[in-house]
Length: 127
Image (cartoon, rainbow, N blue to C red; front, side):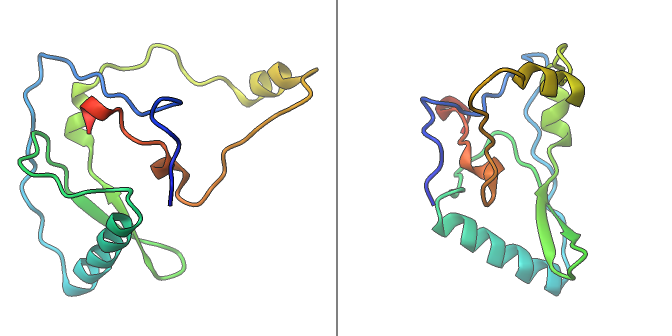
């Protein structure tokens, strides 16, 4: 599944030099969670959203969260990485500000696609 070209937009990490990289200890998972995680990783590798990293500087564990449908959602525990990234001093706008800002425009576009977050790749140096 193709993503959006990195020269259009990409996720860029700004990590404070005051923090040292953290490699989280590997968590143990029961057989059901492990199998769900393995299946999801294979799927994400096949479609090109993730790749295997050799000698990663930062290492974050996966966390399996039960969906209301009974399946599993794979999330990442980026708490250590988030601590090393400076906080954004510009909060997101309120919904009424967003609606007002669109008034008078002829075209409005939303990105709502399967696994939309994964369609914006990491900035190449941050991969």
